[in-house]
Length: 111
Ligand code: COA
Image 1 (cartoon, rainbow, N blue to C red):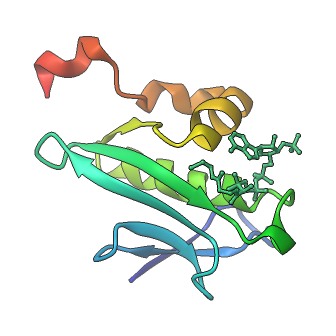
Image 2: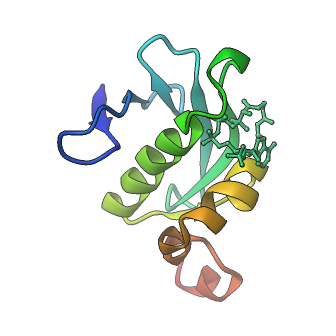
C-alpha cells in the first residue's frame, strides 16, 4: 500500500494511505477516507465521497485526503471529477491550482 504525507517536507500532516483495492485514500485508522471510482478506461478518477469523523472535523483532514488523491491523479495522468461537494465547493475553490486536473467535456474526445 502506498503512503504519502501531504503537508510538505518536514510537516506534521497526517499519513494518508492509498487503498488501491477499495478505491480509497484513508488515514491509518481508516476512520477518515476519500472514496472514488475510475471511469473512462481508468483514465478518470471520480471522487464520490469524503468522510471525516465528527470529532476530527474542521482541522483540514479532508483537505489532506484530497491533496493525496489529486497528487495520485496527477502522477498517474488521471483527470478528476469532483462529484463530492466537499471537493467541488470547498477544496477546489480554496486550492484552485488543482483545477487543471478537473475533467471537462472538451477533454472527452481525447479520452
Ligand atoms: N460540502 C462542502 N463543504 C463542506 C461540507 C460539504 N458537505 N461539509 C463541510 N464543508 C466545509 C466547511 O465549510 C468547512 O469550512 P471552514 O473551514 O470554513 O469551517 C470545511 O469544509 C472544513 O474543511 P476541512 O477541515 O478540510 O474538512 P473536514 O476534515 O472537516 O471534513 C467533511 C469535511 C465534509 C469530509 C466532513 O465534514 C464530513 O465527513 N461530513 C459528512 C460527510 C459529507 O458531507 N461529505 C461531503 C459530501 S460527499
